[in-house]
Image 1 (tube, helix red, strand yellow):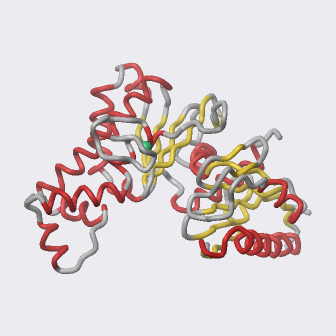
Image 2: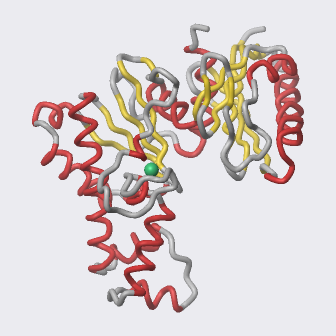
Image 3: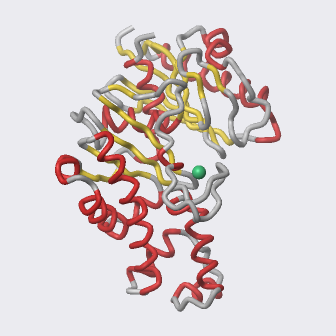
Length: 321
Ligand SMILES: [Zn+2]
């Protein structure tokens, strides 16, 4: 065997993405298949094992040694025991010792972690956080995924539930969050909450070019609101300001607590450039202690949608288990 690589698997709500990744973060092969929520646990497990077995034998035929498999999954995970409490969206995965099951099926060491931690690890090793020691990585999608690297290592907390940054409460009188609280960060920057807010305000009579676009049958997405803001639509501009300020407020608090050198923002909402980054950075500067504000840079994620499985694979290389 000449080369060494690991397999990373990113179990998402709609699909499972996976790849063969080197220890320097290079993706040698990639694949994906859709998750069928009605298929339950067995179907997904069998599909996954089938795909990974063929990836392993293909790699070995090319004289690439597969050192192990890293799995990134949403929801709460016991990282030490390799235990999934449940997968949101996929029934039947309650209290599953996924590491033991996969190790038996694949005869390779398996590591399991939360998907957002995987993204943080990937950005730390190969992306926007390379060379840093302390960073916060946020993925702003339907929900908010958070990961922390502190003193050069992923920080999991006592029961592996750390970095739930999306559920920092910003306004106790705010909208109801999926977690049951009101006014969590996620209710301001989660894409579903964001578009629901736009609809509510338009229905209440707000003036915006968006009303016309929606009548023309265009789909309401954060991207469309960004397009409106680019056309100097005041409603849309203010909405991005407000969203950036909420996010900046949460990040100012985190900067005071953790004093990171990078805050990395990825996911759909973060892909709107200065529209979101400007108010975030401005608010952070205003609200964080000057020394914390000076030492942190807020930057876009560098790795894109493959960072989930790249970070999952990286668990194999950094793990001390
Ligand atoms: Zn919440």
